[in-house]
Amino acid sequence: MPTEHLRRAFVADQFHSFYQTSGRGIRGNVPVRVYLLDAAFAPRAADPRDSALDTERTSVLIAGRELVRELLAEPRPTVDAQARVKHAILTALWGLLGNLLENIDWG
Image (spheres, rainbow, N blue to C red):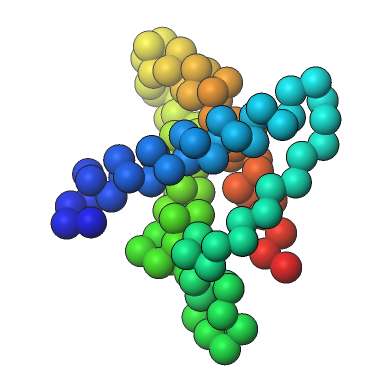
């Protein structure tokens, strides 16, 4: 992507579908396993000959995890009430995805 703004928009768009699909399986407290079979999600992790770790530039999963981490980051203690409400909304919307991304089994 030519700009950071477009790259973040692309990642957010990809993760909307990913999260929606995962969420549909989770409804009703049903265990869900998501298998990301396409090496394009994390090409370095998919290649046993590559010892380098994937980055935000090489992996949509890593880029998505970083984006969600930013969304869920605790606000500074000095922020106003509007920022605290925004954080609560973001946590309610994206907290589950944040947990899923932090606990990916790369095995």
